[in-house]
Amino acid sequence: MIRAVEASQAVSAPVLAAYRYCETVTGQQARNFAYGIRLLPTPERRAMSALYAFSRRVDDIGDGELPGAVKVERLEDTRALLGRVRAGAVEEDDTDPVAVALAHASGVFPIPLGGLDELIDGVQMDVRGATYETWDDLKVYCRCVAGAIGRLSLGIFGTEPGARGVERAPEYADTLGLALQLTNILRDVREDAEGGRTYLPADDLAKFGCSAGFAGPTPPEGSDFAGLVHFEVRRARALFAEGYRLLPMLDRRSGACVAAMAGIYRRLLDRIERDPEAVLRGRVSLPGREKAYVAVRGLSGFDTRHVSRHTLRGRA
Image (cartoon, rainbow, N blue to C red; front, top):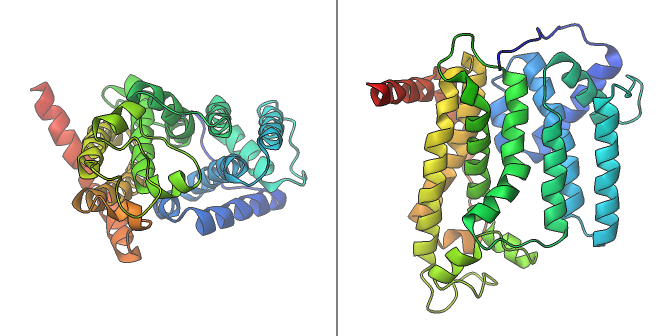
């Protein structure tokens, strides 16, 4: 998917105000995401902020305190708004800044907006209280709420002309989304349990004696919680390794953005692996200085060069 549209720097005042609103939402509510998109040129950064702000609206509906029926109604209202964006029916003076920004971004970049329909589908799964028996079941959910975001982002990044294996770029973007989402699930296992949600596959929980759930700061009695976490960490690492094949297909700054966001989550995974029970005691996070280091490393192209060398060795 080579970038087909050159992003113009000329943006009208109403659209610029809409983008600023989306960038404010992103900076306040998505610290990890914001670190990555800072590395992008202005048009791409604005478009990614619009994408995040719309996605955040969908997530907030699912995570809110409203009755399930009301959530479903609001999600369908959001889907209808997406339909207006897709149809080019959102004017620059519309009162919804997220719709204005997303409409402009989708006119500048070939963003596959159907991915946002998938996100709404995934949040509806949450509203229905879906549970997952197997990893294959959970992958369906992860592809909706995270893999789709990877594919949407690729529409903004584009790919480099002549990049090897570029036809697989959407697949790698999707897989990287799965890796990030599984890391999120591990990090938030206690918080999700308190909210009545269980994402880890039931057969994995049973295998490690954790079917009783995670209601407190200690693992279920007699369980091998560390074994469960290490099992899921290995799965996430394999997904990261596959998804990182996307990096050499992107331009320098897009690759830096992806490497920074993914690198932050990989370091979270390292922390979780070292102390599995930390996720039951509180939210595992990285200090700002470590996030900044990851961003600089991404901008240097280190991860892209590393992946390129390993890919070439694999072909030798």
